Length: 326
Image 1: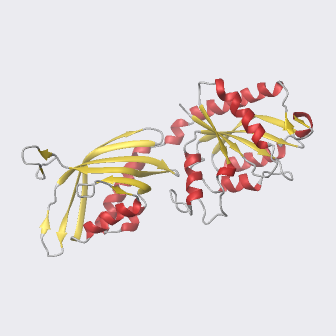
Image 2: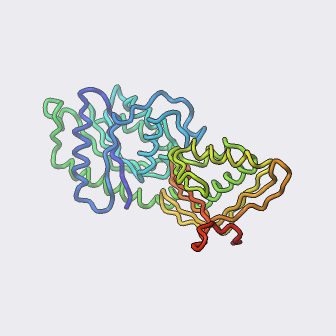
Image 3: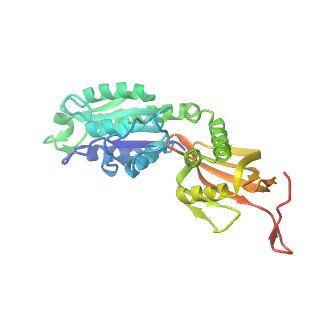
């Protein structure tokens, strides 16, 4: 089932947007065609941009930006609940939009706006931004003037006709989000295989910086040597660094890799082998291990969140069997 984020685009004290977002969310309760979740920008205090979002896909300047990327990346479409400030969109919402790029692309967007003129001028500008971010903005929108839809300009009391407008908006956002799914997914298997190629590249070059761009920060790795698990990116890289201490020259290969890919999660399995030349000049063919890779789409990039390497166990001796060939 697709997921639609209801983005609350104001963080100003005394904001009306929380009432509007709650109204939108409550209206979605009876729908069975999508999952809906309110994403409140108050929960995502984003800093000024440290670098352009396309400069380093999948890597973010701080924890807040990473959490924001995960929240946006998990959605297939959006309903933006936006105020109009001085004929424009709120600075907070613009900053949130500008923090990301790949996470927005190929998704649908609709608008519920409020303000003295119903927020229409803010939506005009948001549609331009959506075009740059490859967000497909739907035509229907909900416009809420403060004078007619808010009692004393403060308490949200929409007219019944607004429910019809909201239902139409939601229908379009869900339909377009569903139709755009093939575009969002693209050639995911090719992207994942490219990440596997980066592992091979990084190992052959003994380059931890290359490997760093393949693994998620919270990766959990089950390797053939103790401990039972390596938790986190630093532990995973330290494990590869230990391998490098044994080899003057490293080679790595993957055989029979099979992938099963969904929208934002993928699982692969095959056989891997580390081989090469030791520091004393000895050439070793290494051993084949069973390799499993679990990928998650993080910030628009496929990152390894779990991997496992193992060998069969001889039950009689309790020793691993290391001389098998795929």
